[in-house]
Image (cartoon, rainbow, N blue to C red; front, side, top):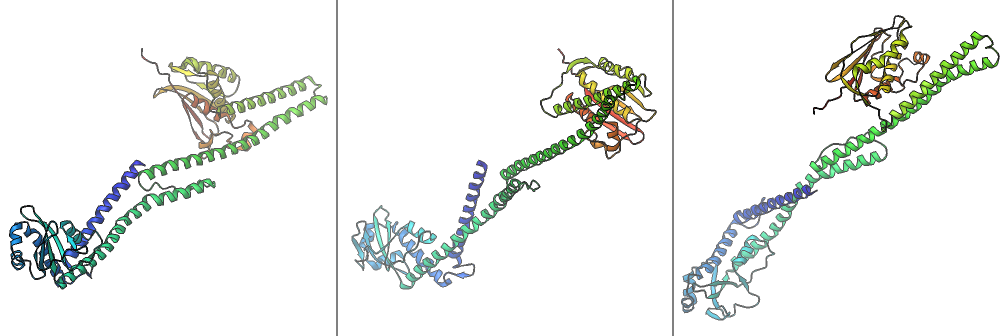
Amino acid sequence: MNKLLVRVYLFLLIMFIIAMVHLGAIQNEIFTTGHILGQQIVESEDLHTFYKTLNELLRTRFMTESSNLDDLMSSDIETLTQKFEIGDTVNLISVYDDNHSFVAGSDTKSIDENSDHINTRQFNRYMRILLPPRQLSANIHVECETADKQRITLVLKPTPNALNILNTFTKKTYTFSLITIIISIVSAFLPIGIYFYINYIRPLNKLQNAANAIAQGNLNVNIDERGLYEIKEFSRAFENMRHELEESKKREQRVLENRQQLITNISHDLRTPITSISGYVEGLLDGKGKNPERMERYLKTIKSKTEYLNTMINDLFLFSQMDMDGYSLELAHCNSRDLLERLLEPVELWLDDTSFNLKIVRPFPSVPLRADYMRLSQVFENIIQNSIKYSNDDGQLTIESYIKNHQLVINFTDNGIGISEKSLPFIFDAFYREDKSRTQSLGGAGLGLSICKKIIELHGGIIRVASVVGEGTKLVVYLPLERIQNI
């Protein structure tokens, strides 16, 4: 705001100077040529008479300074007139001393209250036309000093024609100068009005309209960063606020959609195992499980469905925790080789008696890490289960690790059915399923890879995916190495 005030004051000062220069130019044109903008103020002959009369008045005033009062008072009026060489437009009719006592001349009644007393400042006033003019009387008094500092008053009488020209010129010039003053001020402040409208008023009006639109819920408004620096900064801040509101509204919409999707998925995914459990329990109650083999099969199925429900509930609980900002990992210092061996040992035992081919490239890099073993174990389990779930009959998964750019890189490469190109950007989104009919039959709430992504990001790493339909999928996990401080 201080910069704005300085700019306004500076602009006003510049405009005032321009207005005064403009006025001076107009008045100079009037005094030089007698007309301005095609408007004739006085005729050329009258202008000549005006300057002649004015010069004679001034010459009388200045020639007196070279005369001695005694010499002046010893001269008669005719000699005095000749001595001053006043001319043919102004006559010297009397001389008075400082006490307004008559000294010489032909008229002893020329000084009274209605007389015009003119000094140098008054001449400037008439010339510059800064004050309203008054009609000059028949006698004009010029106050001056002699060479020995004696103050006297000369009473001059212009000819009727000269007096008329003086009064007419003064009146016309003042009137036209007053008009030019108004025009100069208007022309000076008009750019200020345009300047403020373009750089302040119009941008602020647009901001007000944008604010009203946002207040009514319309966030698709265009806020231009126009105007001066302060307005641009304000517009930029307003645009940031609008963008944040828009993003917040989108996040809210996504939350509502995810909530609806969650309810739909949970309803579907819970209905199938619960229906299956209920059917087997009813079969047992109806006596269909009297056969020991059938009863064992029923109980194993109930146990399997119960474990599936427990896994789904755990995933939902973990996802809801990670979706909140307050969730944190239990990070511990470890060696990457030891960590990977611990993570893959139960997987190897689990897949040892299956037809799925697990290939692990050893040895692993041995570098320091800070990791949460339990959460990384869940990441490995989700990735490997997805590879198995979406593999062909000759399913194979290769796991290898190496160091790159101060990161531990872990590759999971399978030869499964792959992921379509249009689905790749969304596979880490919660509840996303590429083929709903197929994935629903395979089970799961669509949270596995989303949980994996959140866990890796909480470790400070990233996870990437590449896939070709019919050829397989490659998931790459990047974990930052622990920085060892030199002591």
